[in-house]
Image (cartoon, rainbow, N blue to C red; front, side, top):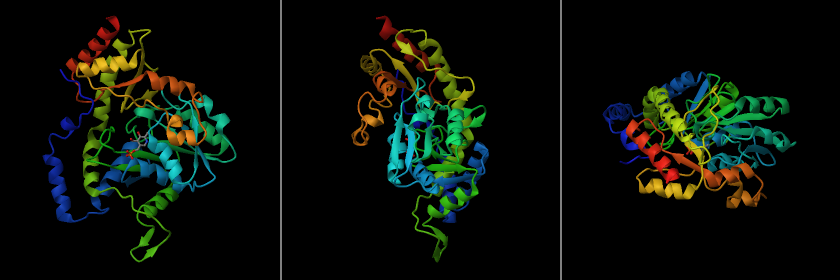
Amino acid sequence: MKVNYSYLHQQFNDIDKHLNDIRLLVKSTEFTFGKYVNKFENEFSKFLNIKHTIGMNNGTDALILSLKSLNIKKEDEVITVCNTFYATVGAIVAVGAKPVFVDSDERYQMNVENIENKISKKTKAIIAVHWGGSPCDIIKIQKLCKKYKIYLIEDACPATGAEVNNKKCGTFGIVNAFSMHPLKPLHVWGDGGAIATNNTKINNFIRTYQNHGMRNRDNIEFWGINNRLQPFQAIIASRVLKKVNNYIKQRNEVAKLFDKYLSELDGYIKVPERPKEYKEAYQLYIISVKNRNRLIKYLHSNNIECKIHYPIPLHLQKPGMKLGYKKGDFPIAERQAKEIITLPCHQYLNKNQIFYTIEKIINFYKK
Ligand SMILES: Cc1ncc(COP(=O)(O)O)c(C=O)c1O
């Protein structure tokens, strides 16, 4: 038996309907903006229950433009967590600002207790990451932002469909970024992303900036660039969006079985707390395990694909150390980096594959 981590072969094995729509696009020659991008933006706004959604070419640029829309620049500081994907921090650096890290908590999310003493006069924003598609404590972070009058940006790149108290992640911040990379819950045929905001001024700025700053064909408002969502990707995004709630439901069912059986391996495996007010999107199913590297070898030898997200926290990466961070600064994230494993958890796993994975993990520890 094989338990595959990536599900993209199955996801797109029936592409004829997608291709029919793409044929229509080619006939229409609306290769930039146009009705397919508008359609996706309207659908995504409805899905999120937010006023504006702007299609973007990827999640990283969605973060960069979110920061730009708030005029965050050199000399400004932006607080974020040290266990996220490189792009969260890359975006802060790309606008010239300084990333300030906090540790993670036991749910692998931004540690709210660590934020307050990192806020300085230079702090302009917090980028709250819903790491692995699991909600961070966005309510507390939102309160801190209000208290200190700093902006809240959500990095909801991996978290389309995740919720806190029935409200979608990516709708709490003043401006919020999503990725539609192939391994995200909402995905396209390559790169794609989106920004969501209730703020019309921010919406207008981003729409203009992502299209060369153009007011019209012959006049620009300011210097801008091009980070538009490709219309053919908008077609795919619209199709996948229709199914995303269902995918998340199925991922939750897989995760529930893993949680139930793996948490019985007390002392060997630590399953994070799953607060009931949070709906997880399970872009990543992460747990902490004993003898991690040996377990991974064993699972791989049994055809179960698993990964580590990630073995080195960002403050210990080369550019992180250059910011002045060192080993020991964030003990929780550093410990987790040695213990975490990501198991396959997606809509195409069947019961046999799920129980095969569980059985192999139990065998490994009981041997
Ligand atoms: C937390 C986080 N932020 C940002 C990104 C960047 O998204 P993209 O790959 O679409 O640029 C990702 C995706 O990998 C992510 O997981």
